[in-house]
Image 1 (tube, rainbow, N blue to C red):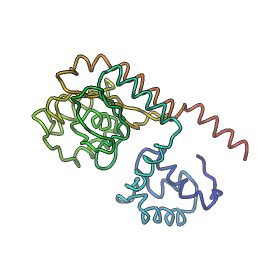
Image 2: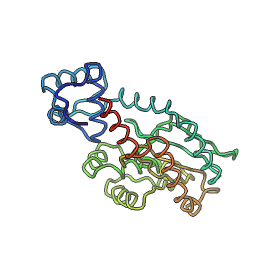
Image 3: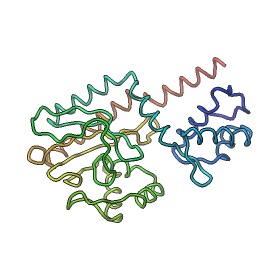
Length: 268
């Protein structure tokens, strides 16, 4: 997006601000928005304040970040994406490959939230239905999210978390968890070896958007009697491949998006 000297129609200005914040991937100040958009600072401040008052943005010092209402809106809109059925088919194929339950999990304020799920056919299963929120620090999906935060964001996040001990294997100190998160980022997958529930093993990979930013986690889990670490590791390449397919289905490619934007510019 380029500076438009306030040519954006009034009814699209708040959406434009949200678009800039979403694209930046970090908290922004009013001055950041002025520099990016070229709009009058007083007008931008008024628009941002309206977004705060209506619950879409939250102020932290001089910067602003998406608030709960905006993240819930984004999550809800994604459920109407035309690729929803295709994503479900991918989860179904992965469940057949692993023989276990598969989850599509997204980060929310309260933890990682299950937004889609395909259950195993085994009568003995671990029930975490769609809508369930689970902790960041002791789940495979949560650790993929923490691992892909910028280092400064990660340290701030870790300091804000309560590292509750759910099992004897749960990380309860920041140093040990940080070391594992570095390894997760390097290898591209995370495991939960009885860290959230006794007798459960899980593995997850990150799903990125078209700009290589963290979007969600693709995970599979099962009881250790049936689903061992060796079996989980054998699925890593398939998990990564399915995650890439979900990215392509959901976001397409940068080239496709850039072409669409160029076409729009030519229409103007």
